Image 1 (spheres, chains in turn yellow, cyan, orange, green):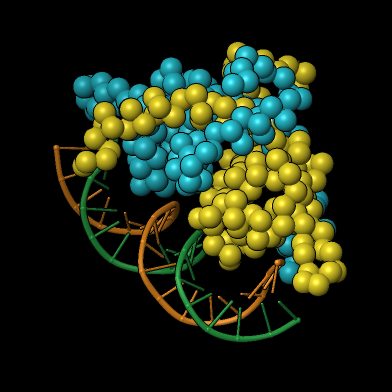
Image 2 (cartoon, helix red, strand yellow; image 1 turned 60 degrees about the vertical axis):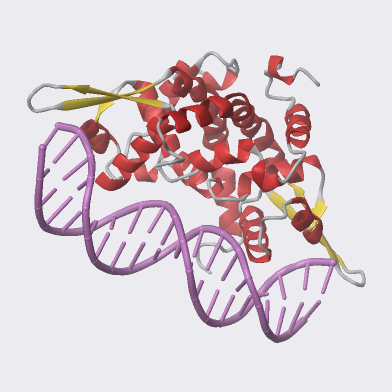
Length: 140
Length: 140
DNA sequence: CCGTATCCACCTGGATACTG
DNA sequence: CAGTATCCAGGTGGATACGG
């Protein structure tokens, strides 16, 4: 098998495609990569990962940082990330109680790959928006 | 501003965090990066991008390639990607008519960044699954 | 302060049927 | 072959109220 894991350029898209093609031998829906991608492809997971990558936060600190998340979805998303081993939850038994959320080692390992996608998004969102307007997606 | 766009290691997560933190000055919901991520964070977009990265495909060819996508969602997702300028649609006026979908330049530019995330997923899905089971996510 | 519980609107996405 | 139209189930996510 090609040792793709050693390569890390921005140019070897073909290698990723190769690996991707090779990774699905059985039913497409059983692909473990898809399971993982589906998990983080919700509305808040990636955003929480990046926010916690800056520094650990408390529950209400996260609410202030991300004003448009509801209490329910914050708690729910954090529990999901905790279950997947990406986020650690530490309770300090003070009064009033405080809970700190931080990235685990696994969580931190995701920041760089996710960062590549974010960098792509930040560099190309203008073109995407322009294309969308050109296709009449806003007025139509 | 730090010239982050020139760097491309797997180790400089801190740089991505920096850039991310710097990119949101106003309301978090207005962040253009989030707009883009939200768009591709649906059930099929990333999968279609990676499939079309292998080679251009026709409509029913994509259906065969991704057996668990419905006709409706395939058409809908392709239209979305087309509007965003990631996928090109070319109609051949033969009989019966055939339509070929392929990645645009913009679409191809996304394959490598997305590939980083996919590689991370393929390398860590076992740990994630294990963590999930440890938290009793399957039996509970 | 840190959640959980409930209810509900909306949207995603699937099944089916139909058209050029 | 390549779609569109319609209907419908289920999940996502928000508002509000309540508990530890």
